[in-house]
Amino acid sequence: QVHLVESGGGLVQPGGSLRLSCAASGFTFSRYTMSWYRQAPGKERELVAAITSTGGSTNYADSVKGRFTASRDNAKNTAYLQMNSLKPEDTAVYYCHAANGWFGYWGQGTQVTVSS
Image (cartoon, rainbow, N blue to C red):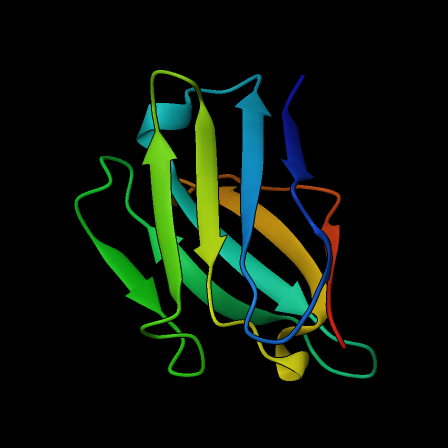
């Protein structure tokens, strides 16, 4: 059974940092591209960052470039999203997604709130 479990969300002040984790099980993690999406209230879900199966390539939304870093540890079946210099507009539920071109899996999401 496939599981993707996000953790690390919370309340942080503007300018602060958070590190999200996505623990995977039930599939061959090292063969999947891992992506991070977010969805703010009243808005569509948007792609934030993606990292290829080997970790050799990453892509970021323009809104987070230079502030967010996606990484992964295939030995631990875990993906990460390091978020620095957080802004109020980063407030959203963050989801991890695993895909290999045939199958895609979603986590349940973790809330990130940036507020003073």
